[in-house]
Each structure stands twice: as structure tokens, then as C-alpha cells.
Image (cartoon, rainbow, N blue to C red):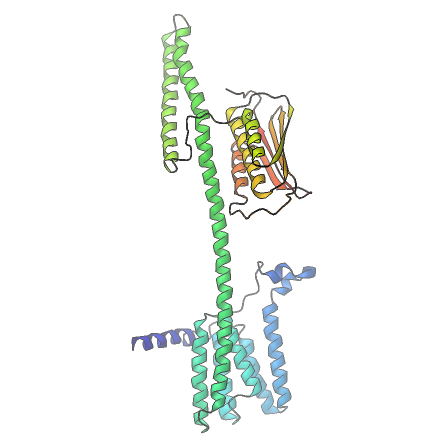
Length: 420
């Protein structure tokens, strides 16, 4: 009993409550494939293609009905056929009720059969359009009421439940089932596409956060080294000068205390970062790589089968540890991408020492075979951009004209900034 009450309540909400509410069919959006690929700048007109199709179909059904019965009654019947179809563009549920009413008027008042050709096509088209525009369960509700309506009219005419009633009911049921299935598949594809887009954004965001965490871990050693030097020099400075004034000794003591406090806070923050992934750095005491380690890196990728060369221009000089560390990681990630996404290609690493900083260019040629799909494709570039942005530099990463790929970055170095 409760199930029947629930079904009745749902039918009342779907087909009776605000049945003639104004729900216009919106035009196609900018993301629709038809609008995007419309030729000759016809995109703004393509937006209204569904409305045009419904109007054209209504005109065809109306002309067919009027040609079948070229009289005043035929004109009235044509209106009964055409009005519900056009109404689906504005009031879909109300259009279905108009169609039911039109069939009733045709069958009872005009004394014709239960379904005229035009009435059958019109009612079926109305139900299909309503199913496409509303929730799928309305298809089942409309089918049930249509079947009950057919049975009522057949009994009222005294013809009984003959085979035509069952045949028409089967036709309506099959068409509505296919329509509802197509709509459900379309909605599922849209939901999957939206979920993929959200997942891609979240993956990119997570990659950026992971890269920032890695940068924080790596730069800890650089910053800690400088702060340790400051603390040691501040502690030793008073002993290098005879008769150090008390004010100067107190100033050096304050500098040392602040440096030690900064080191303590830095270690505390680093402990929080490392606690989320304690295995990220198996040997935290190991020195961070610099550009002097590039030869070892190139030897490593050559052993993996990549033909790589290094070209250095300009006056080679020591750079700040943060710059050298970021440059090494950018080259490392770029070469890893070549191994992963361009099998069989050759790579070249170019380092340009200029007055304002360091220029990097890692370029590879066309691969000689297809690469295996990689779920993290493109995320290494995000990490490289983070490192470049941290230093206030610029970077581009794009395909080359010969089918390869290149990463170009510039890491600025202030004129007075030098390696520690």
C-alpha cells in the first residue's frame, strides 16, 4: 500500500504539479560540438538548431495531416496535432497533456478512430521530447497513463481491448525506453567528463603541492647552511676584536640568538613536512645536488638508453645554492620526461651563463616509437614551473617544429648574489 501511495505521489508531482510551468528549451551552449565546429561563423545560429528541428518536424506532420483531410475538420485536427509539438519547446509536461486532450477530442468528439496517423506520430514525438527534456521516470509515467487512456477510449467505444491497443502500447513503450536509455547514457557521459575534469584539476593541484613540499625540503639545507654560518660568525666575531664594546658584543649575541631561533623553527616546520612522507628523503644528511653533478646525471640517463649531450656557454661560475639546485632538478625532470614520453629520441642540455642569471634549454628530437601511456603526463612541467616561479624566472615548455619537445627556462641571479 505504501508503495502504491509513493508511486501516486510521484506521478502527482511530475505530471500534475505545475504541469504548465514555463520551462523554455535553452539554446545550445558554447561547449557543444555543433556550435564549436559550425562553419562560416554560423555558431550563433547553430545554437537554435533543436528549436528549428522541432518546428520543421511540426510543419511536416501538420502538412501531412492537412493533406490527408483537406477540410475544416482537417484544419482543426491539424491544430490539435501541431500545437502540442510546438508547446514542448516552452512547457513540456503541459504539451503532453495537450496531446492527450487532442487525442481525446479526435476520438470522442469527432468520432474517429483512437489514433489517426498524424495524432499517433504527434503524441509519440511529444512523449519523446518530454522524455529528453525531463527526468527519465516521466517516460514510464506517461506510458502508463497513455496505456490507461487507450484502454478507456477503447472500452468507451465498445470495441474492447483489441490487438491494436496492445500493439500501440508496445510501440510507445519501446520508443520511450530507447529514448530514456539514450538520455541516461548522455547524462552519464557528461558526468564522467565532468568528473575527469575535476580529477585532472585536483591531480594538477596535488602535483603542485607535492612539488612545493619537495622544494621546501630541498631548500631547507640551503637556508640552514646560511643560518648556521650567520650564527657561527656572530658568535666568533667578538673574539676577533680586542676590547669589543659591550654594545657590539650584545648586538652579535642578539644576531646569534635570532639565527639559532630561526634554525629551530625551520627544523620544526621541516619535521611537519617530512612527517607526511617520512621516506621521501632516505638520506636527509646527503648534500643537495648542484650543476657540478650534471655529468653524473647525464651518465645515468645514457645508461638508460638516452643519447644526451651537454653544451655550456658563457663564463662558468658558482651560483647560489637555490639556483643550482633548481636548475639541476629542472634538467633532471626534463630528461626523465624524454625517457618516459619520447623513447628513442636524442636530447641536448644547454646551459648559458649570462650576466643576469642562468639560461637552460633541454630539447629532444622526434621519438622513433610510440611511448607507453603515462597517467602523470604533463605534471612534471608543473613542478618545473613552480621552481622557476619561486626564483622569479620565466619558462616555456612546448613542442618543436620537428616533432620534438623543448623546455626553456631562465633563472635570474642578482648582480651581488653569489654562492655561499
